[in-house]
Image 1 (cartoon, helix red, strand yellow):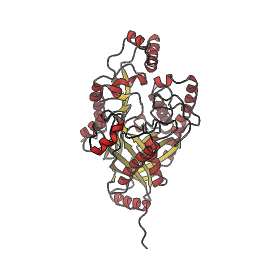
Image 2 (cartoon, helix red, strand yellow; image 1 turned 90 degrees about the vertical axis):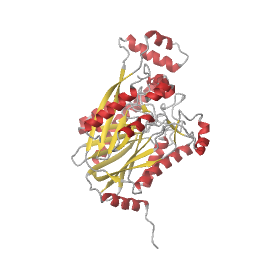
Image 3 (cartoon, one colour; image 1 turned 60 degrees about the horizontal axis):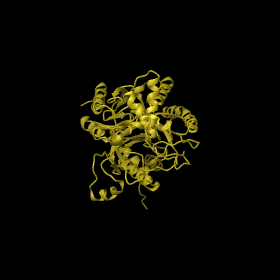
Image 4 (cartoon, rainbow, N blue to C red; image 1 turned 180 degrees about the vertical axis):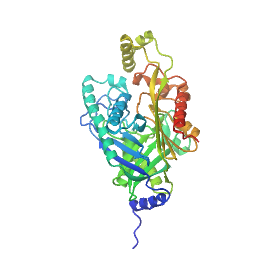
Length: 460
């Protein structure tokens, strides 16, 4: 009796089809390491949480993907199951990787999944939330953070050690569970609106996929993204939320493959409905299915050419800064987070340091072969940026990651900033920043991305 092709068999067949168009001109290595805290430390993501983690639903992971072109140039994508990472820790990791492996800043991108069931990562990136924690939690958090840096460096070293001749291929799928959370309220009406076809607001349902196959045609790594908050779960258990379940599903479907997730511009996007473990698993499976639909069909295309990388920090301006008397009034607010921010700002002023008019904002642009522009933006970026950049950087595949390198605040578009609300400026208090962003924010960021593309010489 003739047997049907297995999943692995199908992948080998597909690799042969793609491989006929390109040789093994790349080297790829991937690795992963558990970073789940052993102690019940404070959790990140929700200001309403008042108790630390009570256990574990899934492991949390640090993963590394190292890509090297035929000329020996490398890049490293690090993905972390965390709500965010701050500039200080990113710079420390990059300094270590430069000292040990000669990697320059432009060759490294650190992406976070923005899971809201992960640990607090020190005083940054949400300083006010950290400052309002019970003092006994500070020591526990800092002890865990001290273990994170060496684990990130170690997983990168392991991935470098696994570099092997590979073929890279790209594709793009679709998943539709993300909903614009600003335009569709209350949440309870979303299921019926979905059925009726009346959901409102911009979304980005693309699922970019980058796959590496070794000389035997075996899938060894897959990098994929989606623009949606990882906020299905709010329980007090460690979890990677839907991105974690998606990665677990892909790694189960493809043994010995490392699956890595990057969060797109989903700051104003929620997985709706939500709130249950069953839904987190469901969305994870749907996202994994979207990736597999690309891997297992003729949608995969070989990546040819070389790797080019560039990085810049933009001085991103705030709007009008508060005067001292305004800050002092806020220090007497009934809102404990407003009080905590005021305390931080007053301490800075009392130390003789004026409020900074700008924040260093990280922007990375990579050319992965002749086909892909991989843009990485700091902060919690709203969907307008991805839609605009994809429209303006036409002629190549443009993938936009946010929550990368420094999650310092929400990054609204000019439209969202003008509309106001949580993403438009209300959330700044939790990050301890002095004021909403300047109305120039969107053009400042987009114009710098264009400059980075010009530096690489990849515009068409």
